Length: 358
Image (tube, rainbow, N blue to C red; front, side):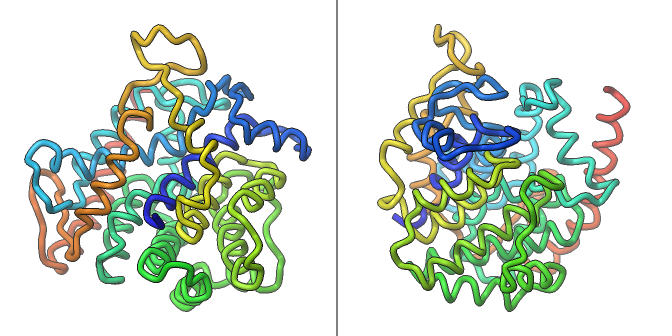
């Protein structure tokens, strides 16, 4: 299914790139090895283990689905309270090679509220929201994406990048195989990121090894590959991930973001099954008795929820936007829009408290 391919494509991209992250130079043999999902690398990952990219996606997935699990309510609202809760749970055990302390990874993403960086942390996690919002109007989807992205990112280019990425995925879900239409839609809506598309058209793509972690890198290569499949029908998901990994830089995040968009184009049937099995096989949780890779809580391990949760997300994707924020449910567009300035102030205040406690 196309919808499954989006999220699974991102997860396998992340897991494959994790073992290569921050290597100065990457060979074809190293990429070939990485695509056996052997574990290891700078972070000491387990076989098939995802990194912080997909773990934050897990937070969105659990945050959206939690109330549905509890009440068997078929309406999946954008529950910002639950998503924030899961981000908070993740923060307590977040890991990263350069930021080993629990809070550092999240703060490394979230502090762009102050320095206006263009970090890729907003894009790397967003595929569950893209699938969830695939039946919304474009206006509702854009607003929903801005609300969720705003939890960590306030830079307008980052917000627009997430919106365009989700719009393209929405188009591919509803118009399977129409890469041309998805690319055209995203490009036509670009304002803050218009120059990114101009660079893609001119084949002046950013160097993945310079300004590692900037959103423009993975965004540009994702849409460049989407553009390439329009003309080259023989190009495969496997080849695209291989090429992405060979670029170097922030390999796990780049491959996750590329994998999410191109997974929506190819669908899960065209993602190597052994890749999916490897990603789903990782199983090191507390009390598991498995001493391989980095121990995680069960809610961060795809093995226990991913396939069922994706199917639930697909079955109950909403057609109208409802948002839960600070315990209140907002249903009309104008009242939902009012949340944004208040939410920004709340997130900045929360971040200031976190920074003072470190």
